[in-house]
Image 1 (cartoon, rainbow, N blue to C red):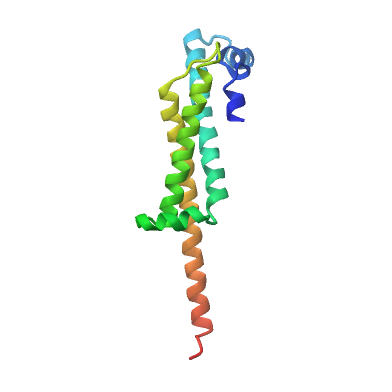
Image 2 (cartoon, one colour; image 1 turned 90 degrees about the vertical axis):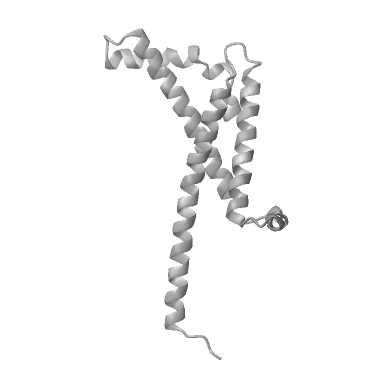
Length: 155
């Protein structure tokens, strides 16, 4: 889906065909400068959102563990840290390849700033996953301590 968004189909010229009439319907007196600023903001928000979703999906796909986590234990990183770094690296590489792809589309421009925005979106997605993981772990620990009080271990 991200590479599809990098094609001519979702270029600024094509998205303005439905966005500008909608904004003019909301405010007929809106200036051209304001229209451009809103369109740019929506497009950059799209970058943030798509990479936040990508990061969350990758986190979810890899969180249960794989063999690479065992190998990475040599570096003394916890599995959560390995997962965080792996997803960040994968999304960063994908963002760079997406911008490289856009450099071949005549109606699109490749920008290193977009890669940075994509990485920020990745960090937002990873932060959300990290918060849910911490919450889930603390709930699990609380449940285990309650269970230990109810049923003491037999000698």
